[in-house]
Image (cartoon, rainbow, N blue to C red):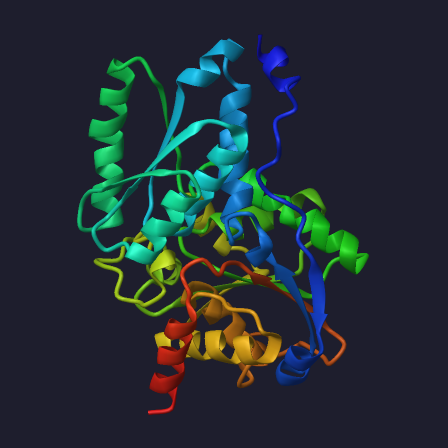
Length: 336
């Protein structure tokens, strides 16, 4: 029966994204900067890869194709993961409900609804929303006869496999491995996928894992030498708001070629504003902190061995939670 379902040729809810060379950012950074434009994914972020793959694997695991109509995906998210789930479910023709905390912005709630997701608002934080999904919503849905399926935001092999699909695209475009790959870290799903993809390609460039103060759960874990939990998320980059990273991300971060970098919210705002000015691309603060590495000598400060001809790939991970008004506010704060 499973093979019959796979023969349906499920649409892939993510796409190959461009890798472009940025002349202006290369001048700022003092090396050759290539931008992997994950902002062009259907949901506006890299999450389309991991969440999309998770949904496809769940569909392919059904023993009876007729059960497709009973399948209902549930995820707790206040941002990009929920939007990616709604987009992927819509493309695959299945149902998805996104449970958001009260801290979620109306802007993101409206985006999730527009993408086809059902939204329910519960709890003051992602942890409370996620607990409610697991302990209340899914058991109740199963009693109704649904095949209620929990969707992890970042901590699952299928998620990492989806994100790993980014790597062969980069290697193909560059005709080899770059000297470094720079990405943001929230729960660590993207970084885990990148390292996994590099392992499969037998490549080992430097990987910079970038966080903001107030959301630096990976840096805290590395400092304490064990998986550690932040007491709260206090950064404006709330889509980096995982108080604890995936255990696999912590393991990968212990490798010699992986380096943790923590910048400030102000740096993230600078990254958003300057990147919009330089490349006319709007990204949210969670991505802006990675873009900030291209400015002010930060990249060479983290990787002193970089030369002018070194190739560095910046994963432009997402631009879901950003508006022109927000960019204006960031610019005004930076000028104060």
